[in-house]
Amino acid sequence: MSLRRETASSPARWPGYAAAVWGFAFAVPSFYWAMGGLAGAASTISPSLVELARERNPGFITVLWVTGVLKVVGGTLGLALVRRRTWGRGMSRLLQLSAWGAGVLLVWHGALFVGQGLLVQAHVIELAPELLPVSRWYTYLWGPWFVAGGLTFVFAARTHLSRAVDRRDAVIAGTVGGLGALLLSVTALIAGIG
Image (cartoon, rainbow, N blue to C red):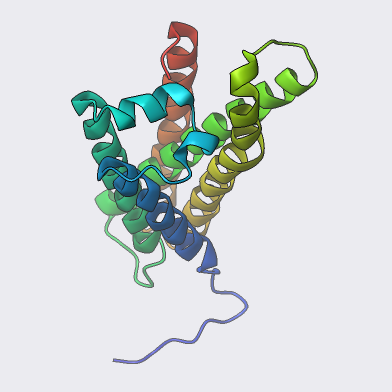
């Protein structure tokens, strides 16, 4: 078995590793809050969510565990995207679908946080005074964090695409994943979910 050195023509692998680190790091708060930890939560997340965590609301605790697991899956997806060998056709399509879906969903979600926060600060929309400090966290921490995570998945997907066995099918799968995530997000926004 020979080790292949990366050359100028070989794609960079850092976006996939960045996506993996992002996913694994972001899973930590979900698991921490699911296990009952609340340090830092009161000042950085919505008071209604903190109250659900304090009350140990079973539905909310389940959501925390599920989102933690999904973030670990996202981290694993990032690692899968840096594999040196190409995957088979089906796996390349699945990776592209998942990476573009995650990337678009995260960028959209983060952009909504930032956009709403900037509108609050510009006094275009009003927010209850007790939510203003939390709004700043969503504007300057959580929103950019989601956008950065989404961009790492998009860059990792593009890098992976250069090694895909069937680029055309992988591009179609990535397009379906990205547009599907956007449609889901817009629909949830219109329905007032999330």
